Length: 137
Image 1 (tube, rainbow, N blue to C red):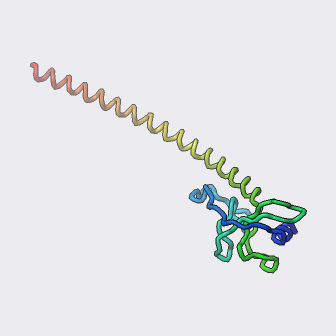
Image 2 (tube, rainbow, N blue to C red; image 1 turned 135 degrees about the horizontal axis):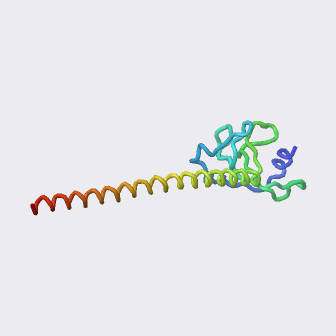
Image 3 (tube, rainbow, N blue to C red; image 1 turned 180 degrees about the vertical axis):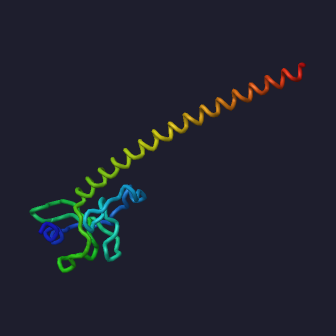
């Protein structure tokens, strides 16, 4: 299994950085039991780390895993970093598309409000003119 080969051949470890999309709950999806994108924590509660595979099958390939994971603990988190990155990019594209739609809606609302302001200004000017006429008479 790829995961086991990589875990056996790991040579380096660093703390995993937090995802840029962590606040976007509506953009996060689940596939099976694993969250999409970069994992931040293992199921055991430990912060995920990034390690480098030292196997012949995946030399130098980065992966996220539990700092205490091993072949005996198959329930620990394991994700290839490059696959996580593709998921993050896909989710960010989806988020950008959603935000573009929201911006478009807000621009439309803002245009309507600007029209309301202009109508209000015209009504004020009209009322000033009527008051001015009444004062002159």
